[in-house]
Length: 389
Image 1 (cartoon, one colour):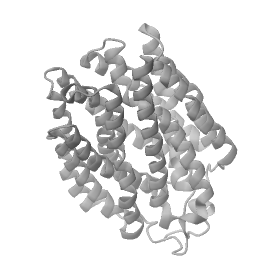
Image 2 (spheres, rainbow, N blue to C red; image 1 turned 180 degrees about the vertical axis):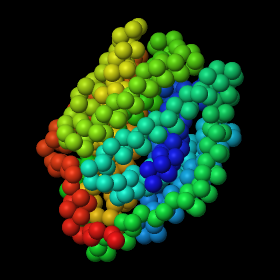
Image 3 (cartoon, one colour; image 1 turned 90 degrees about the vertical axis):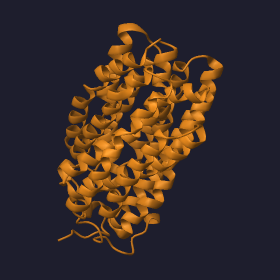
Image 4 (cartoon, rainbow, N blue to C red; image 1 turned 45 degrees about the horizontal axis):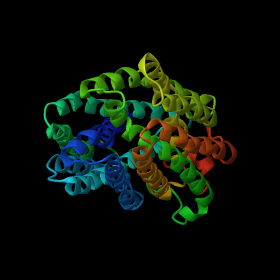
């Protein structure tokens, strides 16, 4: 099961990274300013809002069906992006791609929470995170092609067509989650409004910071540090790859030491180092990027596992969908604000420094309002559910 989910995570990692890695080259072809880039990126991410309707079907029709549909549709959306005639067509295709990419990411997260043992849920998410990072890294394999011609960025959106056979493989080999239809039919999402709002607020605050830090990194490296596409690839690969080790350690610690301890380290040290990356040069920038990748990787297993654990099985996908939507709202606000302020301040780093205050506030809320869930079964956390046979 974990191997199948990891294969899906590779695809979500690739699709989820495409926009951020290529937009600076897309901007050259379509003549987009930084403000325009922020708007285009924000609109592209609105696909995650539409994903709520898709993942809601996973609670009613089954996780497996939606996983297969999202895999195929996400790949088709990527190929459509490669053929976009203008900025409007680019955004429209990205909405489709990211809608189903987000839906697939939600469903496989729920699968992992439901299928893995209580003492290994966060660790399983860390392994899936490594698979997703592999997918994200694959974008960098083809990114140097973008230097060859103004339109060459389109090539990066073609490889996802290989996911169409993957969708058929999921159809044949992915079993339905044993928790599907195991929860009380009377359970409602409104019964968990407290945890839902808390996690939504925390996710909003982190996305407000992370989305522009990720989206404008290449723009920062090209315009403010003079990097070429090849140098950007070298920088990201050498500084981000060791983050996989941090992800494994963080996942294990989240299952043994505590989710909130790992979240605190990731937010304070990891995102703090990332903030300094945008405000330094030379060797220090490379070393800080390495530290940021290692420490911030703890965000996934520590916060991600809460999304599935704190909600009954028959509303679990919807809960994760709404929490993800709050992240989109945060990302849209962060991207628009960063694009607008960086055009006026003449610096991306100063804006990133200000935005770091948001995840720090989210951390305080997490420490105060979230329970510790180490080793607790889903039935214990959600009495409405009964253990599936």
